[in-house]
Image (cartoon, one colour):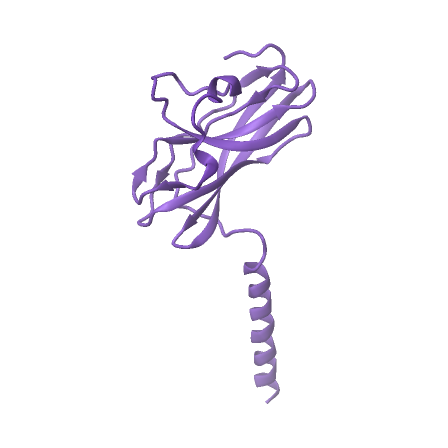
Length: 173
C-alpha cells in the first residue's frame, strides 16, 4: 500500500512538473530549418545610433510539414547594441545584393508583417534580418540568433549559431 501511494504521488508530481515546463513561455527546440548563418565573424563599422541588419542565410525547411516563421532575434546581445526588430525580404528583385545597411533595405517590402510560410522540403527566397542599433561607441561581439516558427500547430524555437562584430566608425558597405 505504501509503495502504491508513493508511486501515485510520484506520478502526480511528475505530471505537475511536466505541465509547468510545457506551459512556460519557452517553446521547445525545433530542428526543421537549416542552421547556417548568413554572416560570419567580420567587422561592420557603424556610426553610433546607426542600424545594421544582418541577414541569415536562405532558410530551408527540412521537415515533411510546412512551417511559418514568426520571429527572429539575437540571443546574446551586449550592452551598447539594441535589437530594434526584425524584417524579411525576398531575394532582391532588381539584382542588387542583400545589404546590412538599413537605408538600402528600407525601400523594399518587408515581408515580416505576417508569418513567412516555407513549404515542406523547400528553400525560401525570403531572408530574415535582425535589426541592430549601435547605442554607444565601442566594439561588440554579437552571438547566436533564434528563429521562432510554427509547425503542425505547435510553436518551436531554433537556435542559429553565428556571430558578428560591430564597432563604431564610418559605415563600410
